[in-house]
Length: 320
Image: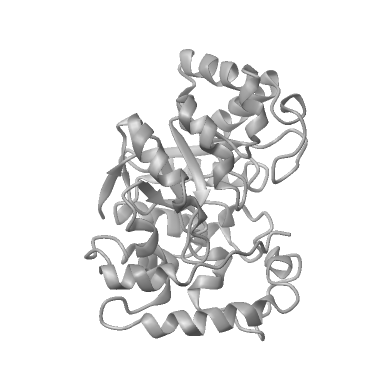
């Protein structure tokens, strides 16, 4: 496992982290706690020292599973979690008072501290962001107060789906240590402006959704069936599975000696950019962990491969 600095925090985090949404059993159907715990432990065994979770993932269930692992391990594991918007709207909508009033931020932080069983949260993020909120300082004042009391160490935001430019002014302001953003072979929009700005401002970048919710694993076909109530039934509704298959078949032509599998190609694409501190694939099984971590400690993708992957950019939004 290779490690990178998480922006100006100075923390050295594993370049492949653990995305813990799926193990929260919220919208992802089929995760079993025993299997999730095995996967978390195997990840730590293999050098993962960064876990990204959220209070909204199963109403704290993901955080509580992470807590079990923290209690049982001696390794230093950095945990990031998130404050959900009070109005329950994803992506961000409404006033700051409706989404993140200061007392609510503090209340959520306290809940996450109890769920995780830690004295301080390494990184607390707002789970959504609207650029208009930067004019109201109460969200920032609340986070800085938590920081002054030693309850959080660093602070950041998770950027709305497919809206990387919405965080540009915030990054320029110097108020956040990290941003979390969608970045994958299909969605490369954050490369346009955000990533270079984060490098300039020394803001850590957490790359999420590297597999485009499963599209870039190569396992989605028009015949794919998801469990009832699994949110991917919405994400891949209509003819979207066919669209994905067509794109993936084209992408698969790039596989070979340099990169043997689509998941490895997807992760190594995210890691090729120097602004990325860590990429956080969801991993609900030991098998997922072993396959994904194989992407670390590999040689850099060739310039030719990167140029070919640039052509795979796909401006879409399956979240609507």
